[in-house]
Length: 141
Image 1: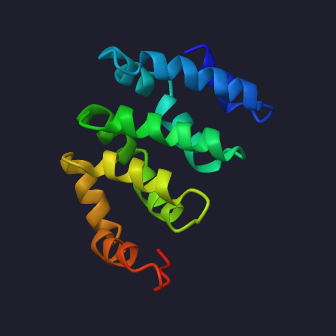
Image 2: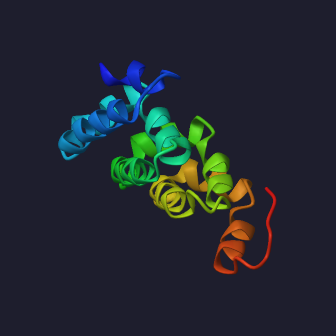
């Protein structure tokens, strides 16, 4: 909880992000951590870090942690889907700098959660999957 405002700050530093990700990494195996992540806007913060932070290594760490928190966690997956994150993740996959991390988070968010699956399909998910298998074809969502 105490790291959330620091991570949302426009003046956040690489050290701030690195420290917060280390704390989250140490606690993500505890069952309550993913639930608490949602309560303190952590889902939004982690996705923001994994898609937008300037340090590529920390973006990757953020994506791995976000995917770990989302995987097989219907409560968090549904929250992420309802916050409108699926279309944003689909757009991020089209960006060379965050493609792998964004795809990992997208898959972890959608897999096995009916609300997230429906939103994905309504967001042209089938067309998106076909495009992602053939990156020579441009796709605009």
